[in-house]
Length: 110
Length: 114
Image (cartoon, rainbow over all chains, first blue to last red):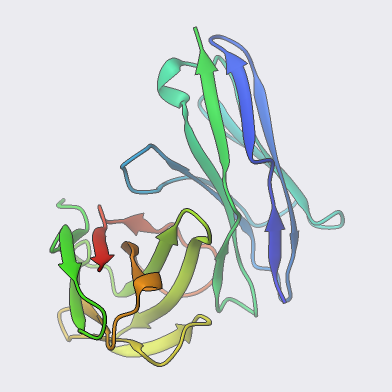
């Protein structure tokens, strides 16, 4: 089957850097995505890695290592508004089912 | 461009009833996926429709079904509701199906089964 693992909670202070890890076990891997969800809101897309390496989008970066079945989301210059849940997600079974990780709740403290 | 819309936003039903939820994707998007979100199980994939055809299906019982219309609008139906069906049902659209396409989520329908 397929499974993704993420830390359940991460806490950091404003201005800091935080890394949220994701390990996955899937078949027919088709890339790793990251989504952010604020309480009471809908998930919003942050980034997607199909190939190994780092993708940077403003304060957020995402990394993928397919050989290690591992990726991470890096958030820099943390702001209070970054407090949210972050989900990694994969398409597997050769682009079929879309599977989300359990989510990491990030709390940014002043 | 208008975002993904879902109706109704909130719904209360009793066990044994059935429910139909509606989703209107972003204009031009042909793929619509449905998810169930609960505190215990997280975000779980229900099914995906593309050009009126169900492309993929998650591991849910046959009580959960859906369809997509020619204008890409989609509905999902849950029959014989159970208490465990209480959840936030999210719809997401994307321009095409498969691979890692970015998905745009609607605000969800909060279903409570009493």
